[in-house]
Length: 170
Length: 103
Image (tube, rainbow over all chains, first blue to last red; front, top):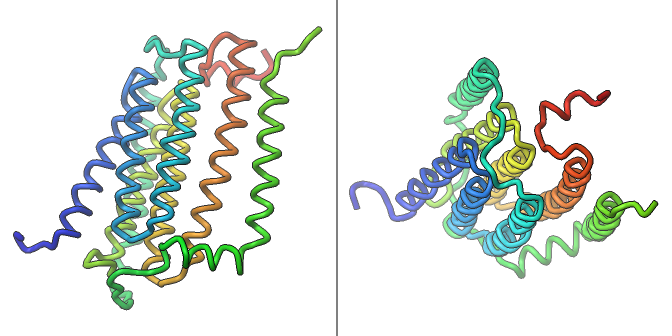
């Protein structure tokens, strides 16, 4: 259809939406609107994962990021009444410098990627490594030790967050 | 190529989202939005990891993304705990105020 396959159309639409929502995250005044745009960005990235047949990661991405982390952000914003958009702005010079630095970084990255087209790599149709069964095989055979260490890390983060966040009783 | 999309497109998309996150970190003073732009940068890197793991048909990239997601969740929890502590003491989340730690 119009010279591009459906997959390429989907990639283009998802990329455009992801970039647009990411820009809205950075440039919106109200923090609550920023959080909602970030949730939409996460959904677009999960769509990219699905395009590459990374099914397990797409679902875990939505469950962990959009379902847990963003809800945590919203709770913190709402409980501490931070949703007023009366945030003092950085000076115009600071924002200009940030924009210029970001633009320079973009130029460097895109310029370094321009010569990478000569990489000839095989073409894969529908990869099977994103399925839960195959990913689970790799995770539990080769990466079992990091998996257990991540559970210890989550426990330490939990204990740390509670210790930092609790009120001190004099 | 992945399904007819060259890997350069994924590289550029990930670079653009990463740079939007970096600009957000430099140009905003609200600490909550700072955290969200850091999450945006992490997501750009996750996207690129999954793209390359699909390209080379190696599951290690996707396993690494799994671990990055777990670490990001832990980091957000601890970061927001620190933020609420700071807000309790200073009554503001302005990152320029937090830069002067002596006061």
